[in-house]
Image 1 (cartoon, rainbow, N blue to C red):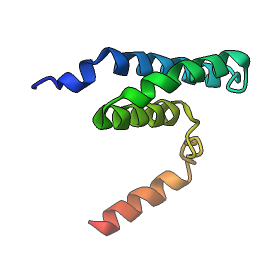
Image 2: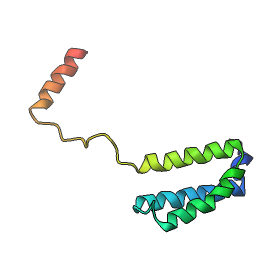
Image 3: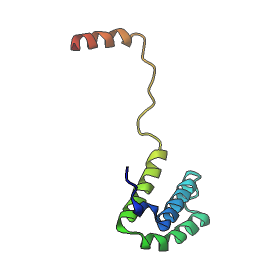
Image 4: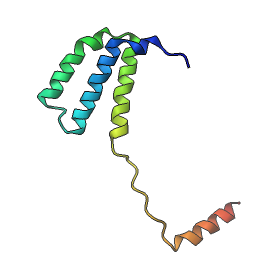
Length: 96
């Protein structure tokens, strides 16, 4: 796979590190802290200098970081009720 030189920019790496730091602060419940504000302030200038492609990548990274750490909206799966097992087999056989 050919490597994209746009993602090798030092500025993109700096922004990515800042986004990861913000994500970690968010996980710790410190997104409104002075530390988080400092990280955001340090990201302002580099983010403005990113190419369009790297800017989009930084937005995707931010979205990905939050999506992988948010709790799933799906309820936890429960074990199958022993009385339901035969009914499931019947339904599957009927479907065939």
